[in-house]
Image 1 (tube, rainbow, N blue to C red):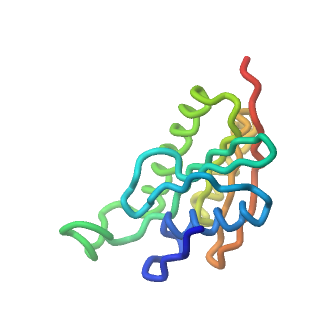
Image 2 (cartoon, rainbow, N blue to C red):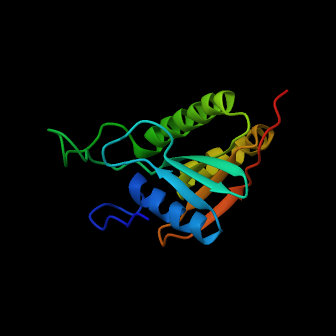
Image 3 (cartoon, rainbow, N blue to C red):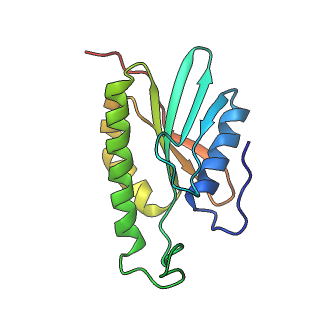
Amino acid sequence: MGGLNADRSWHWEGNVQTALERHLLAEGWTVTEVADTESKAPGIDLVARREGRWLAVEVKGYPSTTYEHGPKRGQPKPTQPSNQARQWFSHALLGMMLLLDRRPDAEIAIAFADFPTYRNLISRTRFSFGLLGFGVYLVAADGTVDLVVPHAPVAPA
């Protein structure tokens, strides 16, 4: 099980992923894969199993106002975090839709740091998440996790 990175903000993707991992373990899931978010490893961010079920979760933190890597580290970003978060939301959704086509037996979820931008987008797409069977988790600053939209396997048409 991974640990929180105290050098990063609570809403950094790695810390959101760690909080979700702890939550799933407490709920009786066995976490079988956790991507290295620091290196921006490709693939599914978190995979868990429980009683013959297979859960894949795409995890998104919340954008910072400054660059965190490279030659611009510490300098302000030109993009507002709320605008960048909308892009991250859409990228996560597309990734999970592509995964559903490859693994129609999977339960799929997306986890976000709990910010108003994400809450607003979730409330505006809740019906679609339900149709797709996608779950949505929100991770708060204190590490608590809330499953705001339940996930379920979708039977192929």
